[in-house]
Image 1 (tube, helix red, strand yellow):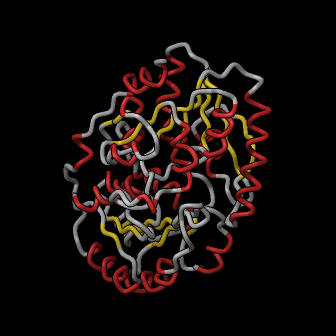
Image 2: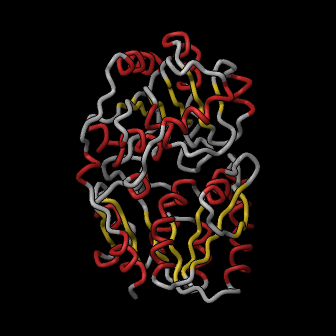
Length: 354
């Protein structure tokens, strides 16, 4: 049985095609997940895509002590649960808890990871905690072509353990996606918005994640001025709790129910994101994209260098870029994603090969 531990929304979307291919080959799959107070995106996505899963453990919140406590408790819960099955390998996006349990039980660990550093060079002082706690435990590691192999070698891996793939992660679920504006209208109709005005979609940074130093204020401080400057529809996709966003930004529309957000990204006039995955998705659709992330990683840099995204770290620069990008016509053009290749059976064969 192949065990997948899915602990982020991205991991759900990323692994669904592989899980289906593995099941098509007649292998059984076990999916575990987690949630917690103010963090239910993962399980909501799994339900949205009709994936069977078992919830074990919780998300630990913002404080380091809370995170450590939740992690220890989750490891205990996972250990007790997975030993009920004959697991022959773990596959995940560097889930710390699952890595520790699998390694401790002698289960081979297969990690996929596109962001080992919060840096686009090879500065190992910027290594993410998840990378330090998982990559050295790997039997195999899969990475996108944009991340240098040197980084993974420095995590005590040998060359034969490192596998490249020729695409940036979100392409795996976007390549067959067909945007539908009627879906956007259905989602936004209850809010009685004027859809002739600019559609500006906003996503917060993962400020509760252990790889983000603190909650950076520039996006929050600029939102009211962006509204005044553009007279656009401000649509916020919450990352955690939504109530405080509704209180702080009554002029914005806060999406509380889980929706297929890619439709919105495809038809947005502008996307402002503090993370990685939705930024890349917006770039895929040629939607003008501003990154307010507190760092630039390798795939961020690749998208910036190819003219699909700009990065800002001050409020004045953010406001300037909003005005600049909204004044441009959105182009339906070929971009870097058109030349990327995805071979799911090849990846699955490499996962299953002993």
